[in-house]
Image (cartoon, rainbow over all chains, first blue to last red; front, side, top):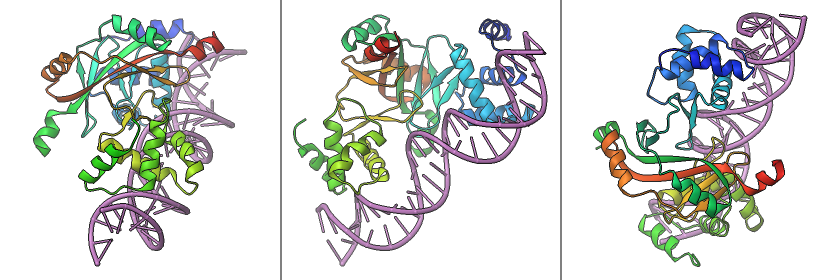
Length: 142
Length: 142
DNA sequence: CTATGTGCAAAGATTTTGCCCATAT
DNA sequence: ATATGGGCAAAATCTTTGCACATAG
């Protein structure tokens, strides 16, 4: 989680180049646990990179997701959120404010086989998404 | 799954009224297993109700979801999909075309407790979402 | 030098809102 | 009669795209 060696390696292997923007965006995402939206990430990197645009943030998030360096979370029909922690884990989403937190649980592996057999799909992944209310919202709205 | 008695009951209890549009939208959603988007549902009901608008479809889907008669699925950062089957079950989503199919699996109940304890959230629900490729896309793209 | 990426502005896609009339209770 | 809902058009929100210039390899 400290350096960007994996970014360089993966990016080069894929035939893409490595821009200052791409690196900055990944670093910013790695530096937070808030599961930011593209717009929030845009605000995070803007101080260091005032001419960057939201389009560049979106473009790079897609590239990074394609390379497996970032995961995209679709929790609530609003803006997608992004996570630089690509180790297998789950998320809990606040139904009130949309905040997302990590949960170190993974779905039992054999469920993928069962799901594939029942649906006829070739199942490659499984996400576990909890929802409820976050400590903040519970306090403020009680 | 045959009548709309539960719709009448639930709607009345909530202090809302029961419009022809609301009923038609729920019936249409109950009549398909395709997990349609709001726009697809709009096209489904338009033949019977030519003056209905997409805004009405969205408004009613939100009301029905609030009343627990419909579930909203956010699978792929595209348009939300909707499901009138509110019994506990899961979904598998095609990464290529976005098609969604049902899977009769439910996440182990105790995971909610674990997730709540770890995150500090008050966890009320858990969704299990598989992804992969659907039979159609596998055949067509091989 | 060539491929890849960025900034900018515009467009596309999805969803929500305000206003006024219609319908349900 | 009053509250709730719908149609319409406009806007808000989120995301993608075309193009000309810039940067990386």
